[in-house]
Length: 570
Length: 34
Image 1 (cartoon, rainbow over the protein chains, first blue to last red):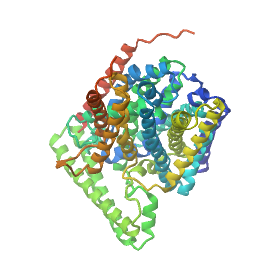
Image 2 (cartoon, each protein chain N blue to C red; image 1 turned 120 degrees about the vertical axis):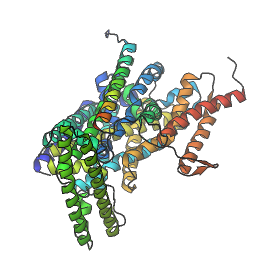
Image 3 (cartoon, chains in turn yellow, brown; image 1 turned 90 degrees about the vertical axis):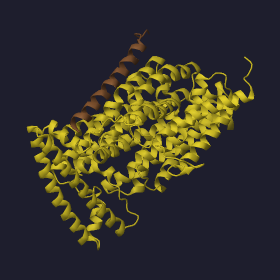
Image 4 (cartoon, helix red, strand yellow; image 1 turned 90 degrees about the horizontal axis):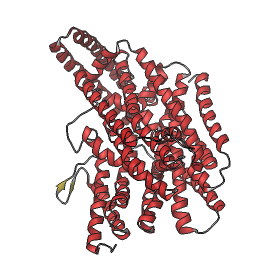
């Protein structure tokens, strides 16, 4: 990177964080520390909600995912606007009425202490681990790209977040997120415009190329339980995930509980509902444009440069160069076919288009086989080397082709995204462990000052835990899916508890508590046996469905348990 | 301080319509360019 890029990167990060600390230094009481003094407008809330969800992984993996797999991932977000409406109607008014600090406080007023503690505890496990991944995921990629030490990168991201989250609390998180989200949106839109300008063909031609090569597979109405992304899983399975994530995950709930009024909080959520699908579309579409770009300009055979450089210096260099030669050859042949395809498309020769489409697809297949050969060499050279390069596609493109200054800005986008998500997580982990566990069950009846201090201390401890977890984690199959999976194992159960609380008024604490334990056990069992058999029944379920199953199990079982026990007298 | 009131039902309906519109548009793109 050039000096200009470093200046843009550090200048952007320092300006955002400095402003956040300056504006919020010295939050004195619990209301200002954990609820940001209840003064945020809907615009800040909406951006804060979006910044929390948009992790660095979103910006690193999503364009790469579109590059490899096409745009079908967007269907995952179709349930989100509907979830926003349900939350706006049901959840938020109740949180406001009870004036809670955390979502789990509601469970004690509705059920009992043990149900509240269980939900808080499930959240702490899941979000505590996720916070580590939120730092580790981008750190491993950023450290490779910037040639930084991985542990240093983990500490760099984690420590900065700890500083402003501990000093300024929820308000600092919201204020910085507003700026961070602006940088993220601006940076991505600029990148999109630049890629578009670099294409040697028109947008319509580019879309024909992408479409014919299977990348514009945006919507599919085919129903398949094992398929992660189709219209049906998005509108049902993902709906449960988003209800749980936005309605019961403290890292999101805390974002809108700091609203000036119920109206502001609702508007913030609805704003997220309007913007999320278009935003994901833009990010995925940038990945598709990068894909089309690489149909005209030779792409790297493997996007993680560090690995190919190592290979070139190893004993496998000769085999590697041979594969590289074959790859170049296939690229040239494919390029000719693609140009003919565009011409045939313009002239309306449907038969020729179809046969060229087949030829391109077989060339694409050949290229993938050569890439598999390279991946095998990488593994031979270093058995522990990472052979997935999806997460490197976008930033490698940025570093190779975008102008000076813009590269720094896009690194600022990734760092901002990593920091904004981590900040919400640490803020929420600190709040939940201090309000729902420490203040409620361990050390009651102390002063306001004592609990504010303990919240700060717990936030810092969770931050240190996240850094340690990140330092010792190993790379998961796919970063996005790892985080979503981790959520899906617990989210269904937590959502079930809340929905029983809101809608099934005659079910009481013992029944829902027992139902939650059974449901969680079933989900873990199903996940463990997924892909094989359970009680003679073959199981093949997309992880997204765990949310729906867990939730419905809690609702059904708690009703059964309550009925067996006898409905309480009114 | 009084804030202008929001017609929530109308806003929710608008959101659903926008979502439906986007899905139809995406489906059109999927079919047209495949």
